[in-house]
Length: 69
Image (cartoon, rainbow, N blue to C red; front, side, top):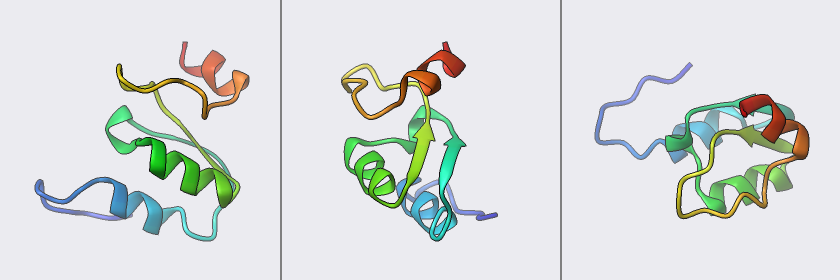
C-alpha cells in the first residue's frame, strides 16, 4: 500500500508497488501511460485499465479488454 499527496505523479507508486510482481493488475486509467505500460510489460506485469482517449489500445491483451468492457 502506498499513500501519496495529491501532487504526486501516480506512475511512481505503481512502479514501486508492482516491483517484483507478475501477472495482471487492475487500476484506474489515471495510472497508465504508454511508457509505464511498456515498462511493466517488460517486467511481466499487465496493468488492465481503460485507455485514455488519446492512447491506442495496443498494450492490453484481448482478455483484459473483455474484462473491462
